[in-house]
Image 1 (spheres, each protein chain N blue to C red):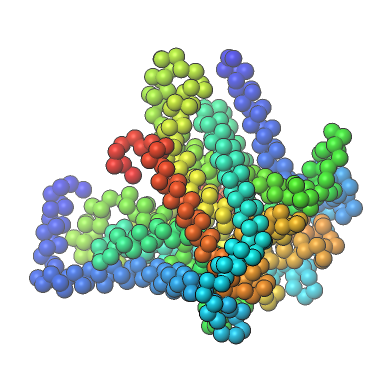
Image 2 (image 1 turned 90 degrees about the vertical axis):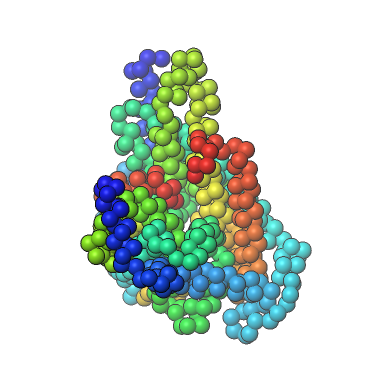
Length: 317
Length: 279
């Protein structure tokens, strides 16, 4: 469409608009709000409303049956000073997040760099490597993992070929959490695809110039690929971290928080408090602490990003 | 290293590692076809001594009077409803944010972005209490209705980004032709959004089909439960007597996801690459 037509369009626009400004303003608002109303209603009813309710509940004792009782800060005090399982859950979740997220991203980046080549069949391999990620969250995969790493499971079957006597990986206190971490790292497909898309954006001239300067593969990776990918790394880091703190299904189904609370994820403990013990007030307080923790780390990553995330154009993005 | 040697080592490494990646899935499929006595006897093997299709028939029977046909039907109804609801609300809202001007638009847009990062746990309990008070526990409403009002903010964000890429001249031309705002949305923008709509539909299908916590909290009545919950019953240590049928139903539950993946792979990969959606 050329400029002339858009001038005409503007004129037509001006001609048709009512003369009084506030009326057209009100009409615009009305139309705008009708379009976003599905989200706005949901946002008020299912997000903001519940958040306020959750904050209120965190200062009460509430078991769904009798009315909520105001107890002030008691839930929070009890959590921090008189609930060792809360600290266990925090510790387990922190280990899980800070081991699984870097591992997952490292794998995703490594494979993405490998796939960012002109070898034949890369498209097929990419599909194969992505398959675990599509089905990763399902109950079927949790069920499968539990049997795979069980005493008589396939993992021990393979180890037996090498004469190694395996254990029940899921039920042993030292190996239960690593088994779950492995399950999550196995699903590195989504960050891999995001990295691949990022790699394709890096201009080839940069590498050519570096090759002329005699830079080897490693220094090209460190000096060009990594800095150019930092925005993508940043994005992946934030999303994976938030997801990590909320992990529920795997622990709930595979280990049920055990053995000896070694895989008691925060979300699992919260579920137990809310829907097994019906301590809705206490669970709400836990949810708010989770929100504070997640916000803290998100803010930390955002704040630190100016030091390590490289944006090609100032003011871009 | 010359290029042939490099190519061979690439294919060797990628193929071996790929096999390693797929092994758990292949093992599940193999186990679903093994005779009961063989599953844990020669566990690492991927080749059943005889094909035991009977596992599928037995698994399909389910528990007592409730067969897996009920779970699959329930999952299908819930998932379809959620996909339709998500497409409806996501496209309307995204058009509003991307193309229209109204008061507090930027503030509301900021709210939308923040909710993408909000842990679900914060709203979980009051939502449960709310749904319980209005009698929605043991119905599908808590799982389906939210899709029609808002759905996932992530999808809305994805659509907004996509609509922003559509040239505004098209809207202006439609205005000249006397198109209303809704007309622009319905006849101009929406048809051009097809690729983004497909991406949203696929992901909302995946997430709903896989969803475990939602059905776990809201559906106690076995007749209303989904495939996820049915499988969990199978996996319950106190009730497991038949491993073969359990693996058979696990494989069946993954089948719809595989089929969608095969047919819509292109949209999936593009959707993830361009928006950074979490699969």
